[in-house]
Length: 163
Image (cartoon, rainbow, N blue to C red):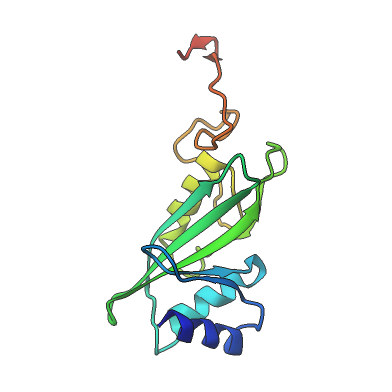
């Protein structure tokens, strides 16, 4: 199935939409070029052969000390009882004022709104065109992204000891 999807994405979305096909491991995955992510997601949701109507999860993974993050999208086609994993690989920008960026898919699936806010809040991934990208679990004035592997816990928060 994944080979067929790759072929259709290259044919109907863009020849460079799929960067890499990961066939090993428990979940085969398609690595998607960030600039084609939204078009790929619309195609997978709207195409009658696939109808991936449910975004189950978005996860951000930090591969520190390697210099990249991956954003993992777990899709489900409820009518066809199929699952698909998409991944987007991003350079690990570690500057807190310049976050790695990927397009938001909240326009494709409403569930992305919450998942993208979590990935933004805890990993510092910026989702371009998200309708309300702000912290969801951490206080607005928190410095840093706690799930990054290079994160250092602060000693205090508003003069309150943390440790």
